[in-house]
Each structure stands twice: as C-alpha cells, then as structure tokens.
Image 1 (cartoon, rainbow, N blue to C red):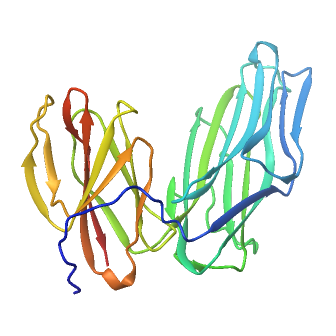
Image 2: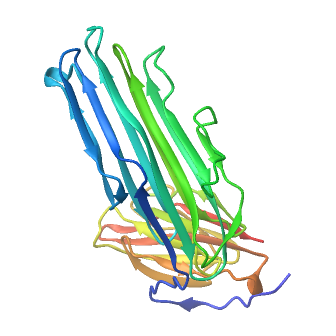
Length: 312
C-alpha cells in the first residue's frame, strides 16, 4: 500500500477533464405518435435522422379521449452520458376503434473516447400502467448486433458488463414502443447511461446540517471523482475538505448536529454548481478518501453530507 503524505493544501477549482467521450444519437426509424377516439385518427411524426438534445412526437384528441407521446432526451455531463425515453398512451373512451400508440422506434447511439477507458452501460426503466395493459417495449442492443442484452421483462435496473471504450466507435440500438387498445393508460420511461467503471466505490458517511448538499460521482477522466456543491443560497461559498482520515468535529453552528468528519488534508473553495475533479490514478491506489464541505452562510457555518471514497 502506497503512503501519501498528509499535507494541508488549498486548491482553487479547476476541472481536470482530460478525457473526451462523445455520445451521439440518430433515429433509425421515424418516431411516431398516433391516437384515435374511434372516429378521427391523429398522427404526428418526428423524422428519422440525427437527434438533438430533446424532441419527439405527440398527439391528443379533443377532450383527451385518446393521446399518445413518444419523446427522448440526451443527458450529457463530465461524469455520465445518457439517452432517456418516455412513451405515454391514454385512452379515455370505450369506442371500439379507439387506441393510442407510441409506434415502435429504433434509435442508434454511437459512443467513443479519445483514449481507452473502462466504462459500462446501465439501464433504468419504470412503467406505470392500468391493470391488463400490454407491456411496453424497451430493449437495448449493445453493439447493434441483433442480440438485446436488456428487454422489457428484465428488472427495472440492470448494470452492464464493464468494457474498454476507445477511439473506435461503438454503437448501441435502443428500441421502444407502447400500444393501448381500449380504456386505460401506459407510461413507460427509461434511461441508458454510459458511466465510468473505474473501481471506485462511493458511500454515504453522514448527513449534513442546514440543507446544503455535496454531490460526488466518478468521472471519465483520470480514473477519478468529481464533486459539486448544491447550496441553499447560491451566492454562499463552500470549502470542500478531502481527507485521508476521519477526525470528527462538532462545528459551532446555528443548525443542530453539525458534525464535520474528514481530516483537513486538501481544501477546495467552491461556489454552488462549480465542479472540481480529483484524479485517482493507479499510482495512488489503494486509497480511501473522505469528503465533506463546510458552507460559509451569512448566519454562520453549516456542513454538507459526507462521503467515503474507496479506490482500489
């Protein structure tokens, strides 16, 4: 086990995202929503081709006798890349020919990295439907080779197997759809996330006081972690403290039970929503880091939630 000197350092926030991961999406088939109240058919189509940040198709009969929507969104950040989908179908009439459909649609995702990095695909899915409604389609085909690793009968959350992503593009096909013939409703939502798999475990250590929060996640760059405070008062300043040990301290504060845990080995001043990245390369592993922020409120000091980060 390598020993890291315990030296008090103060760093001003500077993101260290050296890795570049790209994520693009294109509709292979049109994204179509159709609805009929038994007499009139309404159709709306989003054309096949490259997708922007969000979009889709939706229709609604007068009085919401029948409605359908099929929408998508891209979620892009330094620590996760995702494709989200939502299909909603509602029929509120008993007319024999009434139906609502988010037609089956295929979206092809292409991902690549500027240099090799270990990642995985995680799938999250949720369905809310009336009893007896047909199961909506939600399938994921990694490598677009005709084999669906995730289908609608799987669990609502399924982590993927780690793999190395590099300059060679890798494609994933996402197939979705929902059909409702007769009274009822279906809401099918899901997300496919590309996340780092850098052998880092992040655990909750303790809660803070005052309502301020610290978010901490793994990053694509440098096998590390990224942190960002979400403060009750956006103009307040926080100081994120990273320590190699725990030295519990009761902070004098107008808020009750203000406990601060990490040893003060590295101090990073951050305003709300600022991001700081901490590399955890193989040279420093195995290592355990404790993270928490102190917030300089106008009424006094407050603390955020605290984390334990284990990098093996």
